[in-house]
Image 1 (cartoon, one colour):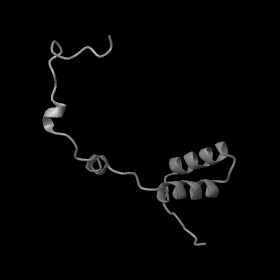
Image 2: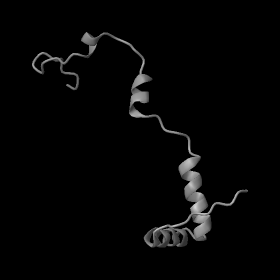
Image 3: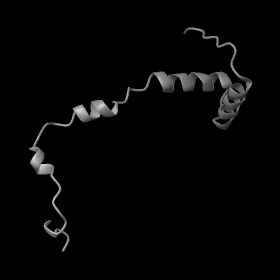
Length: 77
C-alpha cells in the first residue's frame, strides 16, 4: 500500500473529519481512506446528456404532441 500525505489542510476540515470518524467509530486516518475510496472508486454515473443519448429513437414527433384538454380522451373515468 502507498502512503499519502496531505499538507495545509484547514483546521475546520480536520475537525470535521475527526467528528465524522468518531461518529462512525473509526480513526480519522481510516475515515480519510473511506472517503477517498468512496469518492474515487465508485462507478461513474452517467451525465444527463449521456442518459438522454441512451433513450432509443422511437416514434414520430407527432406521437408526442399535446392534445388540447377538451379533445383528450378521459382515461380515468
